Length: 166
Image (cartoon, rainbow, N blue to C red):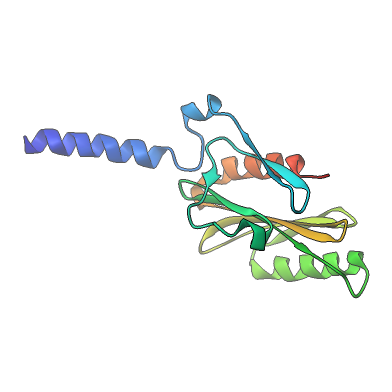
């Protein structure tokens, strides 16, 4: 009886651990979900399997939501911005500050009002995308475990490309 229970628990543990943050065969069958925020008029498409976090019930305050999937998270926020200087200068300064957070941080301008910073820390792999458009500051923060680098790179590219301001 104990041996059967041990085998069953071992199988359950292995199946739970092997599906972290994507890469499982079932992901190809799952559909991506579009998140649309009508208060700030933007949308993104989430990778398969991501769902709304139960701790995120303040969508209207944050202008977005926190989405999670087995150790991975995508945090989307928006806020009104009334720059006291040029938006281009604010974007460049924000990019510089974020890049300095990570020892291996790399930053890339996407256009004059958007950038992405990638790096690692004790919590894992990070990608911070920021864009200033139509008087708003939009931000997408993605965090994945270090062992999911390939999935992280793929998901970051897809989520950023899907970001649309209406």
